[in-house]
Length: 66
Image (tube, rainbow, N blue to C red; front, side, top):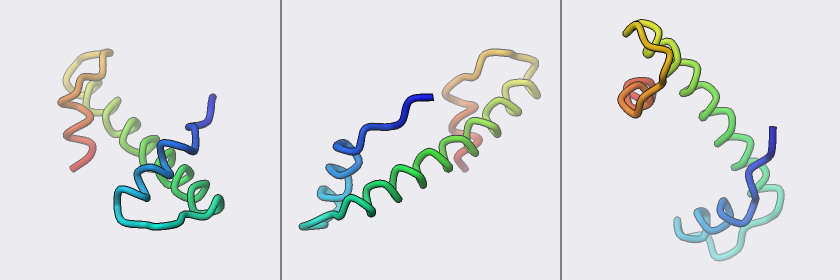
């Protein structure tokens, strides 16, 4: 699996108000984003299967994110 690029994550941190962001902070943010995304996807797949579908829809993601 490809890793997320760091630049967009650094931009998110700067838009949140950080003047400077260390490389280790951006890498930690990437790890957190990937971890949370994986958990949401597992729940979304379960929601789709519960609905009798194999296709994950945006509504499944929204349900999983709650």
